[in-house]
Length: 217
Image 1 (cartoon, rainbow, N blue to C red):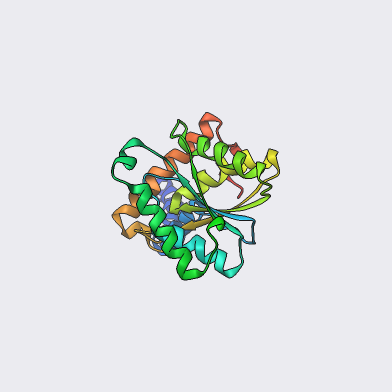
Image 2 (cartoon, rainbow, N blue to C red; image 1 turned 120 degrees about the horizontal axis):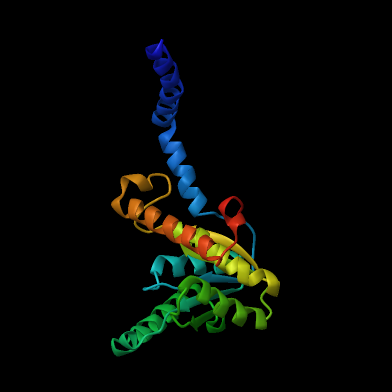
């Protein structure tokens, strides 16, 4: 009798195992999409979020949005530091932007570099600084280019800051060393997913972003 009960109780578990085995790729892809939501629509500006490095492909993606008419201006967020100044990385960035502008025939005033302090919590602090600057210049819609699985946390930080100021944020992820369709097969993808999921939950628990960010876009 006990053996029959044990056998019966294992049946649901067996179905779960089979479902996970058959659909694990779909489940993992959807988990990746949860951390990298993507919105639609045009905007006043495209924001390339800050980071340890300004990624060239993110800037190029933003410039393509300008060329296609999806936005009027590109805003690049920069965490300035004395180390960068010593090695003239600002000079290199200026040269990079100048070359891109020349090739695409864009006016220099269509690209703006905003330097922000790297204060904790970094992503929320960046959002406060950047949205405040843009709001004062009349921006009402902004596309946020964010790095892969960092997108959800960055988007909600910007959204929480932007909503009271009347600035709508449209999330747009970009991927460099992994892709959402197969991130679990890449070491960097697995690390990024675990790292960003933990940081996202941390932001929710600390109250930096609302609980509804767990279930809504």
